[in-house]
Amino acid sequence: MFDNILLSFGLNPSDFTVKPFGSGLINHTLKVSGNSADYILQQININVFKHPEHIAKNLTLLQDYFNKNYPDYLFAGPLPAVNGDFLVKSAGGMVFRLFPFIKGSQTINFISTEKEAYQAAKQFGRFTRLLKDFEADKLEYTLADFHNLKLRFEQFKNAAQNAETERLDKALAERNEVYGNYHILQTYNQLVTNNIIPLRVIHHDTKINNVLFDEQQNGMCVIDLDTVMPGYYLSDVGDMMRTYLSASNEEETDLSKIQIRENIFSAICKGYLSEMGNTLSDTEKKYFIFSGKLMIYMQAIRFLTDFLNNDIYYEANYPGHNLNRARNQFTLLSKYAAAEEKFEQLIIEAERDLSTVPDF
Ligand code: ADP
Ligand code: GN1
Ligand code: MG
Image 1 (cartoon, rainbow, N blue to C red):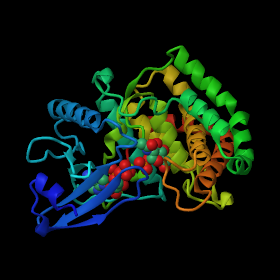
Image 2 (cartoon, protein in one colour; image 1 turned 120 degrees about the vertical axis):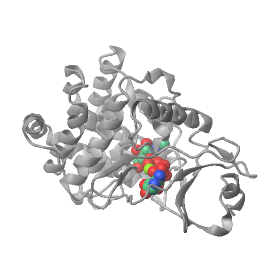
Image 3 (spheres, rainbow, N blue to C red; image 1 turned 180 degrees about the vertical axis):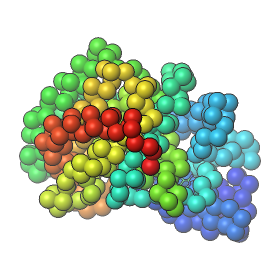
Image 4 (tube, helix red, strand yellow; image 1 turned 120 degrees about the horizontal axis):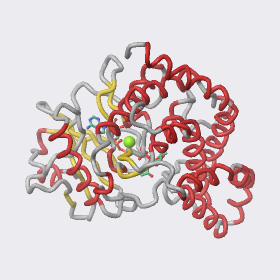
């Protein structure tokens, strides 16, 4: 089935086996295994990424920048096809790209140790730090308004207006949660309207399975670079809070299992600030804790909106899947908000430790 695609990349299909790989919700990822080398073949979801050529352009710009300024940085960019393009179209109109499978790497889906959280946060922080002098506005917006909370709220309102009565009823409690947490949108609006914090080169999807680790749990590099574009650092730190703090992830339906791990919070702070601590302005730092509320709230709204829209965006494996995910995120949000005071204290300690304790 993938023979022609492999040939386009100069690979002989009979030398390789191709199998589904990973657990992403958007693209379709395959591992291409051979005796001499392994690759990652990815079919880009063109319903989501309407201009895959924008992704390819961004990655070329970044690759060039790293080659020139930080040649030792492990940038997980795609490989060119035989014709020199980074994207290959199948006869059916599907769009593919190929990456080298980074040797000795592995991904995890849950954080179980402080070291993993620290290392992941460090990798995302390093990425943005190394690109701090790259002109962010040279990058295409691969997903316009991706983390624009104001727009996400409008999309939720539209979905609620057009939803089937049954879905609306089922989601009553969660719809109320959206309004109950409206203050998060107000703070966000204030930040954006007054240009209080700068745009930087941001990854925008800092889930733990977007970091490659070596066998000693050291971070090797960040992957899944489709959403790298100008944005606020709040997106990256906030999504780490969203996805690392609880031992169970957004799929968990036993809500009692959603618990904040304070030691992981400290590890995220230390890992990210060990790279970005001297780059972030004091104003940016003031919103460090807010970032978690912003991203958890946004994701809750996105899952809920998709439920109201009859599950057109996120893969739903059973009826009510996206509503359960939204419910999960609202629970996480309330636990996060309850821990805020403690977080304030932990940040101070983390910053103090950073100046005295050596790296992991
Ligand atoms: P998605 O957008 O679907 O999340 P990713 O780019 O994150 O796709 O890839 C899915 C999984 O494939 C990752 O979580 C990781 O396990 C693996 N992967 C992707 N790129 C590489 C790579 N270059 N080397 C090794 N593993 C990779
Ligand atoms: C999607 O592709 P994946 O699974 O890493 C989504 C993220 C969400 C995440 C929720 C392009 O990420 O924004 O936070 O699902 N990516 C896109 O699991 O919408
Ligand atoms: Mg991914």
